[in-house]
Length: 479
Length: 95
Image (tube, rainbow over all chains, first blue to last red; front, side, top):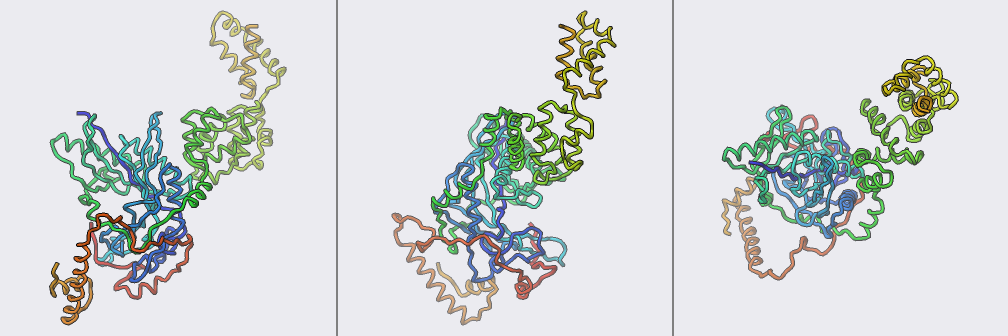
């Protein structure tokens, strides 16, 4: 039987606020245990939560970026469960009326565009951390993370493969960083994915029983966990078994998922509106004001690159994979408006490659967009060849000669020979010395032409302008 | 729902509240009063009333995003039953 995999994702994005969602404690990562846990985070009796405006603002930003409805009023609810890293005995979350309702995200997989619908995005607080190392048979609790603001972004079950799920997660990851609401640091847990996976016979409508795989903190694990889980479910069904709805954990070492707990339904959490928090009103004027602060969104920029600069969909998608890269491209292009493709190639190739190799961020790139534009201008005006430019690039990267492009070209003697009379002289010399190949060419051996080009380039150590050499040789031989 | 003195004692025990026989009896009367109140309210026909999420028709005030709390771990941990290496220790929990 042919099976169809159905995937929905829940992404927890840690919002980039200075302070927690309901208290004035710092959210800085890596502090000594419990030094950022105030009376509210500890849930001491009699304390009251006060909502952080910055957290709400970031939720609204996401809503506006995905074309969602912003609910007003929006309601906070208590989600009740017992665990020592949740000292109140409930998590403040949203159930009915989340801040963000609906919305859409476009993904591309294998050159095909697909729309993924969002169900909602709601604000909630993170829990603390339990350490099960040896504390004389006790568990250690660190509540620094308790109360950190999260935006849980829930998709509809619109994805049909792990590749689509990864594409969606990557687009969302780029988006939250692009609009500056989350640092996206997956190692530190700022962006975590839960995947709801089910399978059904291809062509049927009814959804199969789903399992939720928790806390996938890399795109690779997301992909592998979904693939494993789908295989597991298909095997059970093909053997005549039934899927049990449950929460599972992915074990990266064994590349498998295993049961964490049988799944609770919403009822088990006894959700109810939190009487400590009043309804959140979000006036249209506030929404409009936030709209003003939003940058040009990745999708819009991608479309602009394609329509205005004739870049391919692939190039445009790579350039918008981070706002830093897109901004770098824009800044380079500003200096060299007619050479979009050349700029794109160099940023996606040399610049990205070198950044990756050295493990540094685009923002720390040692070559500024203006400096890159200067170099590329020398390629486009024929001063140097693309190959020579790579050597100049290397010198610039290493900070030679104050990154002055012309000085480096001069010092390295890379200037291309573009003077017609000089090239003519060269061509004549080579023709005179290779009478046999000239004769071969005239007798129809096309290959002889390339050999002659090779001789000329060799004679100039590759510095002759190839296009001009080509034209001149053709003229001499055919003309 | 009818509540007994032993129910009250059990809840008190679970909540770590020390309570003697007289207090348990007094608490039983009070809690029973609350249950009666709930029963009275449940008898009201609310089918035409729009649900509200809060008893007061006021809206949430927001605070600016700024760190206002300082590290007072020592003070807060002075009332904790057991701490080590800055952590609160609790009976071990294994999923």
